[in-house]
View 1 (tube, each protein chain N blue to C red):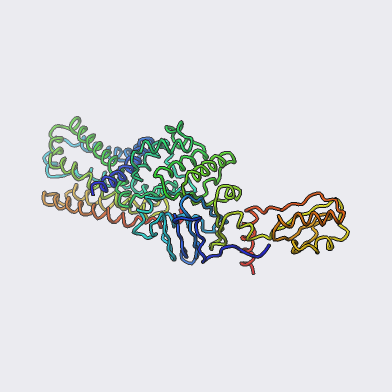
View 2: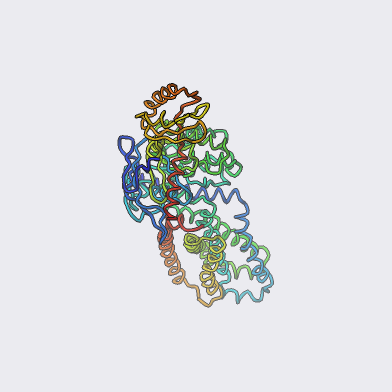
Length: 244
Length: 330
C-alpha cells in the first residue's frame, strides 16, 4: 500500500515539477498571471488613500479587504484552462497518456502546479495592498481596514477559492479543443465566485464566523468533488482521437 | 502474379515461436460511421520486429493507440504483453509497454534530461538516473543531456523520443512512423537504433512508410488497408504474391522461342518482353535455370543473361493496395 502510494505521489510530483519548470523557463507565464491582479489593485489603493481620517469609523463596519478574494478566483482560471488543451495542441499530451499515469494523478499534478503560482500571486497582491495601506494611508484608516479576522480569512480562503477555480478551469480544458475558447470560458466560469466575494466585500452578504466556517466546508467539499469530476472528464480516447 | 494474397483478415498469423507479446483477434475500431480498422488478427512473438505498412488513413496509428490502451476497441480482443486489453488493465499494460508517437511531443523548454526525468517518474522506474544515462547512451545523446529540447534538430528530437520510450525497459515497444519527416541521414540513424534494439531482443511493433526500411528491419510485416491484407516475412510475401520467373536475354531474338522454351518441363509458360528478352514462369528457378541454359545453347543462341527478377516489398505493397483501389472502383 505504501509502495503504491509512493508511486502515485511520484507521478503527481512529476507532473507538478514539469509544470513549475515550464513556468520558470517562461517568465511570460508568471508575468501574465501577476500583471492583471496588480492593475486590479491600483484603483482600491487610490480610493483608500483618498479616504479622510474622519471617515475611518464607517470603514470599521465594512469588509473591503475581502474584495481581494476575487484575485484567487480569476488568476488560476486562465492558467488551469490552458492545462490540458494546451498540452494537447502542442502534441505533448499523447506521450504522457501512454505512461502508467492515472488520470486523477495527472489532473492533481496539474492542479497543484496551477495552485502554487496562483496562490503566490494572490498573497503577493495581498501583501502589497496591506503594506501600502499600512505605510501610506492615514493611521485611523489603516487600523480600520487592517483587521486580523479579515486578514486570516484572506489567508485561509485564498487557496480554497483558487483550487475551486482551478478545477473549473481544468474541467473546461479537458473538454475543449481550442486554447482561446478554454481560457475565455475559464474566465467566465470564475465570475460567479467573484460575484460572491464582491457581495461579501460590499456587505450585501454579512460575513460572520458561521458563514466563514460554512463557506470553508463547502469549498472543501467542492474541491474534493472537483478532483473527481475533472478526473472523470479526462477521457484518454476523447483527448487523443477527437480533432485538435 | 499467382493471385494469392497471403493471409487474409480473420485468419490469425502466428508469431515466430514461443509466447506471444501481442495477440490480436478480430480487433476493430469505428468512430461513428467511419471504420478505422476492422477484423484484424495477428500474433507477435517476444523479441520480434514487426512492421505495419499501409497507406495514409489505413488505421495504423489507430491500431497503435488501441493496443497502447489510449483508444477502446469496438470489437474483438487482444492481449498486450501478456495482459488482456480491457479498460481496467490499462495502467498495468502501460507499465509494460512504451509508445513512441509519430510526433515526438517533447517539452521544448525543458532539457533532454529533464524530459526524461519527468517520464522516468511517470513510469515509476527504479534508479531513474541510471535509466536515463542508459537511454541516452542507447541513442547516442549523452552529450546533449542538458540541451533544451527546443534547440534540437528534428532528428535529435526523434532520438530523445526514442530514449524516452526506452526508459521503462518495455516488453513491447510501439514506434509510430519513427522516421517520418526525417532527412535520409537522420532516418538512417533512427533506423540503426531500431535495428540495434531488435538485436537486443526488444519486441518492436513498427508502423512505417519506408518499405525499404521495413524490408531490412522487420522479421515480419503486415499490410493494412482498414483490414489486414497480408502478413508474413517479406520474402514469403513476395513468393505468395508473385509467380517465380526467369528473365532471359539473348544477343539476337530466337528464331523459334516456342520450340526452345515450350518443350521444357521446368517452364510452365513464357512470353517475349521485347526483342531478345523473354520472361519464363517457373516453379523452381534453381532447377529451371540449368535446363533453360542447356536448351538455349543447343539452339545456338548467344545468351547474354539468365536471372531471377526480385520483387521488392514495394511491389507487394503496391500490388495489394492497387487491388483494393480497383475493388473499390468496381
